[in-house]
Length: 144
Image (cartoon, rainbow, N blue to C red):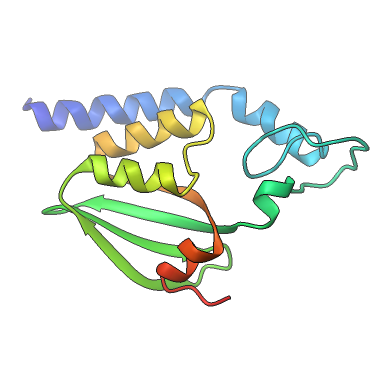
């Protein structure tokens, strides 16, 4: 088996092992109970009402899903929460630029996001939620 195929299968195994973790289940329970933000998972102030909600930081941000794929460079395109495609498409020559884009877009909040993002980069395709300011959102072709 060649190195590329081995890396692909190992990253698939790591992704499936990561999916069996109970960390997202516990976080989901806390989100539905209104104890943590549904976007960045920080604790919310009292009183807690049983509904998913966002913290003050995330409520003023635009939530955009960045899809990325390695094909003679790294190709990125973006969709909003309402599944509308944004007009801007970006191409980078290195994975470091994709990582920088996710970091600047507030996509790498916790270890869970970082680990999944690194696995997706190894595989060569994936997506991550970005929390963008108005200026960043407009730069991607969004309309306020």
